[in-house]
Length: 329
Ligand SMILES: C[S@@+](CC[C@H](N)C(=O)[O-])C[C@H]1O[C@@H](n2cnc3c(N)ncnc32)[C@H](O)[C@@H]1O
Image (cartoon, rainbow, N blue to C red):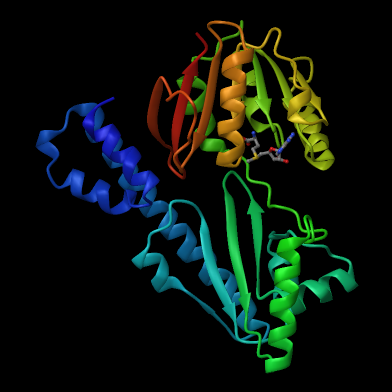
């Protein structure tokens, strides 16, 4: 890995890609062709993400204001801390976010809290923000905040309730984490990085809507297996396999990752919360056949017992990640 690649990876980890790529490009004559291309891609994608967040935030705020909901979009924060993925914050100047949530839903944003009326009322009383996501080729996350003016008494009750939530496991009843798929534009680069070929059997551990499997089956014609806990995502993945004419190559299991078979698997793909990834990387290194590959990607550092054999900063027109590869000895 070249110094520039290491620098770019470190800057992704520290969330400073935008400024670091600018510094690298300030002295272009010191770079070889590949490094120059990488740094230019990093700068271009950083600018693109910032622009998308600005446009998206302004558009949502426009809709809210036209509907008579006073709110503020924190555009300045985006400039001060350029985001590495699509995420912006909108603050409502009211205590009830219901109408804003409905408007955001009409604009394609999903709500990751219960939608039944009593649970929603309960959620909105006890929280002051939610994350809504819109899943296109990239997942856009909007943090919707609302002001909560409370009496001293209700603040004490709320603090007690929070403490209780911490003590009782799964007490955030009905709250689900937003689904975050690998950005579509990164898939070709990631599969190429893993040297996937038609003779591989690819296992996606937590396959979501099946996008990795379908891309691999469609482009390389390899057998693909996915495990996914969420039934609705499994349905989406199966439908998408049919739509793309690869249902004969793609098998989707609505089951725990732990049930995944390893016998013929030659490539394991991982995009999970980092803590889970570390656990699975270590386990798969023990269980897979020699020569198998484990490919994982994430903007945060991934800890594992054994460091990755290869790492690379990966940029598409719209997304940023760090690709990791472990070869099973
Ligand atoms: C970050 S998404 C990645 C989806 C897909 N691999 C991709 O890269 O687009 C992780 C997925 O893993 C699923 N998941 C998390 N823990 C799981 C488990 N123990 N067993 C099966 N699936 C799990 C989640 O429901 C989620 O859909």
